[in-house]
Image (cartoon, rainbow, N blue to C red; front, side, top):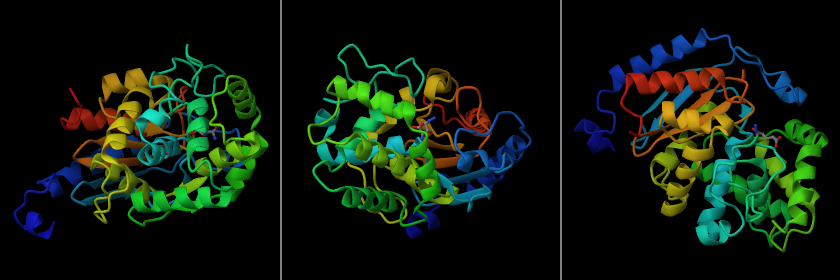
Length: 322
Ligand code: DON
């Protein structure tokens, strides 16, 4: 990297100009007052609507951060992308997709429905994500499974901040009726691997992974690992196998932004995943990973400032895929 930096052939050569433009986009989006902070659990309801952070990390390890980038927050549904990448690296796409499809559901993220073959539509909706987490080291005990995933997250994040918010986990578990209903419906339809005996364990694990904490900087590194074919740009370690890395980006592109996935692909043309905490990752393949964090959500559950930033990003730079 040093020799390339000296030769100024980093992936973003005009770094200073680039960062100034990103700063302007950050400031423009700071003025946005739209959206509502999620209220279904107190730990999310207490988040300040003013929090706003943007971090990016390029595949050459160039970094830039603006705003509340050290603030800890839960990954929530952003975990779905990484959980898929981790289990697909471990088991291969064929095994994983014998349980979960690849189609956008066209339904709400937590709707009780399956596709025409009685599988969850994709790994980015709750049904698919619950089955995906149940596939992770399914023959192992709960503690080791949690350790395994946390270690994988740490690798993907280049050993930057990864924590766990137990209060969020406990609240998620205490308000789990919909996810229980969804899981019993899936159990009836034989959606789970045969090792899954306890739906309580399956859902605890799913909620634990929603309750993993990051900050903008560490989540930007995680996104940059996906931008870099599964190799963490900070440590040079391969954390996600190449094909699962490609596959998760395809799924994020078609299904990552809830019911706004079609609009987002159309307008922004980049793979992304959002979560109910206001977290969002966006990947510019072979260029960089971006983390956006701002709790107020639009009516479809995506961060208002996050989505707005992405639209401005592709009108400023030619990052749209097409
Ligand atoms: O399963 C749930 O209801 C949440 N804990 C998932 C979080 C999330 O971000 C999903 N989406 N909106």
